Image 1 (cartoon, rainbow, N blue to C red):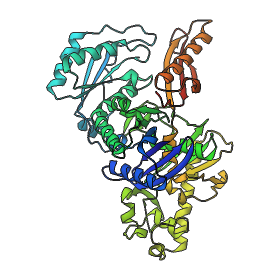
Image 2 (cartoon, rainbow, N blue to C red):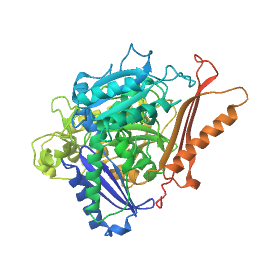
Image 3 (cartoon, rainbow, N blue to C red):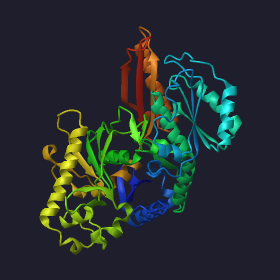
Length: 515
């Protein structure tokens, strides 16, 4: 058996699984400290389907801890951004496009140093160790505890980033965390650099959060390995999370979409995940979320790490309803739903109250919403359906029909049919689809580089890149026989010499429980 847990802003969902079979599914309110909500969810699973700790082989968790910390600009470490690229790149220094409040929150320091590469691996300038030592001394003087190192075209050649990290570590000691951009983002200097700085700022919090999650699970007598789900629907172990917390940012929507695929049997569809705070709309292609092809803005910062292409609406079970306009959200009572909503004895009109009044949900005290006018209730639900339908239409890339799957506890707000899209599929255990998605997550490996392809070598280059992605997946803990390539892109770059081509390959495989 294994357990999937998804921690959202309003609810913490958990599912006890035997392979792909759901043995039990529960929904608990997310607690302010988060970990006690996980404890309560695991205890509820035990009540539904008794089990012993030694029977659990793995625990998979999706969490919003890190994205919330960035959005709220709190609990971030003093961070420095060091770019290797002089004499180039002076015009746009590190952190040039960051919101001022975030720069302040991380006590930001930025530095430029010699180094970097051209797209084909030719050096821009040699590394200057003495220059790096001067920067390190300034970092130490300003209390920097985490450093993000980015080099021009480091995804092509990352040697200089590794050398710079050695110099910094010798000067600053092992207590200062160092994040390297070639391990974080893709081609695109500013976006990759920004993603690396975010990762560096979250490193201290990652240790605290991982320890807290582990303590919550261990308190239930479960000694199985703990994994956290990544943005692309694959898994990473707790040590990986300590180094790359930024990889968890979009795990919530991704888990929901993967869970929707598993429970509905549809591997290509539109998925609407309605939680307590937001409704996330995305597209599943071959069982995995369609990834964003452009830079992704997170808390006002442009990044280019792997993120699903998701459109979020401020509509959820805890969303406030305007009695004058029948508009829903974006404000939400969040995890306070069970105390503030009308049906639970509170004084706030929420979308959950509307669902109960319409007979779509049976929770709380229905008599407390009996006074709501039926025409008003219908107007609210019609507005919700219209906004969701428009969002799906905005997300799809062709006029071809696409099935729609609704998951999440708040999906009771949606009608059984949605305009031109027809029937809305609600699979079994739809309310905890995100926890199911976390529990079935696989292991992945991705290669994204620019190659100079000589005439007559294309087939061999592509085969080598595919094999590199497969090897990376196996090294991450996948069962070798289960690994397959699920995504492949080959884009010629005409403005660069040498028949330059950007190749991206993604492979996934089943987690080896013995690994």
